[in-house]
Amino acid sequence: MLKALAYLVLATVLAGGVAAWQWQDAVPWLSGDGAARDQPAYVTAPAALGNVRRVVSTSGPVTAVVTVQVGSQLSGQIEAVLADYNSEVKAGDILARIDPKTFESRVAQARADLSAAEAALLVQEANLSKAQAVLEQAKKAVDRNKVLFKKRLTSEAVFEQAQRDADVAEADLAVSRAQIDSARAVVTQRTAALSQAEIDLARTVVRAPIDGTVITRTIDVGQTVAASLQAPELFLIAQDLSKIRIEAQVNEADIGNIASGNPVTFTVDAYPDRTFNGTVEQVRLAATNIQNVVTYTVIITSENDDRRLFPGMTANATIETGIREDVLKVPNEALRFRPRDAGSAGGDQATRGAGRMKRMIDQAAATIGLSEEQRASIDTAMQKAVEEMRPAGGGLTQQRDPRRMREAIAQRFEAELAAVVTDAQRQTFETWKKERESAKTGTVYVLGTDGSPDQRFVRIGLADDTSTEITGGQLKEGESLILRAAPSPTS
Image (cartoon, rainbow, N blue to C red):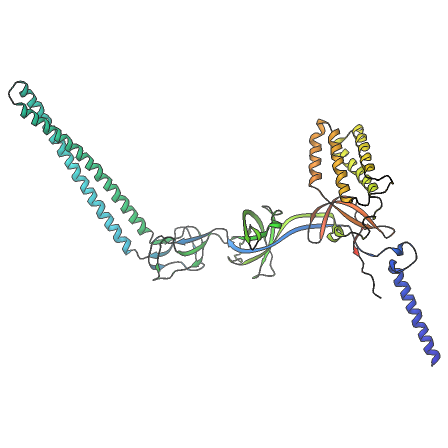
């Protein structure tokens, strides 16, 4: 019995030793043998081809493309309502009627006033004819008395009386003409009053201004409408519910990526399993500030042929602001990773800068079309620039920031390039410079053959929540990117 127990204990110890040896061999930093076992372990992911899709999430109410409020400019009692909720109407269709009796009496009064004004005009025209006849008779009397006065057959007083009568008749004629102008003005005034009364009478019939669907009705028969400074709303008509729009609010941090034409997908709570498609139609410039949160209104339009989307629903929208298909991409976590000994990782930063410089010169020479003489001149200038960044001992100054060093090299390179390009190459150089200025750069680390981080400089493009597009640089497909250090096992 004791012998069997001893064999069991021995087997357990041997199994534990084998497992510990295998575990230690699988995690390099647990072992004390070899340089690789001195390196920490990392969580990695390969640089792979795929799609990068940048989106902005937002929400907003569903509304009709055109919504018209139908009101009343008149006050009165509703006599009839001829349209109800969801009624399909055409422009000009009667929606409701206001009791017209008051307005009919105003029309009758206005017509009577117009008739009286027209009769007064006829009287004034008759007075004008009378004044003209009197004036003609007075002129004849003046002419006759003038001849008699010259022959001394009448007195001067008689002649002067005839002259005065003619002057009075001429003044009466002028008065008659003025009275006719006044009468005509009164007729015009009464005509306008009649027209206004007829318009008010016509407005007792409330008609649809557009083709559409009645989505709101706020009146009933017998209700009194009171129109004062603002016309009361009687109906709300949506012009065409086969098309809808969404007024989405987008945060100021995301609005710069949105433009007209961006594709949109959205859902509503009424149909959680269905996805609708739309398009950004407009980005409105007016900002809304609520508790120091600035948002902008983005108008999204969509087809609604089956009329499943109703005004007032809340749409949860995803706006696609950019997409890259089948491109080299890396996890966002890889761009954020920095090893603890980042200052020494990857060796001499100045030497790396020289390598990057050579690739920059090759790319610029191919794009701009540099001659051999231009290439040699820039090579010499940039070798001198890199040497200036090394201290006398040959190592990199510890206080120097690698990012600032890269920026300094890039600025020096552009200055040297600008000095050697010809006038014929100037336009191409400016285009190349703008492309470089708009490009974003980043740093990733790949797992070297010795298990240490190897720094790589890359140009980055579109990014989404998980991945970032790589548009250029030293990274190749399939290389193992370091995401983070693996956690140390606990004893």
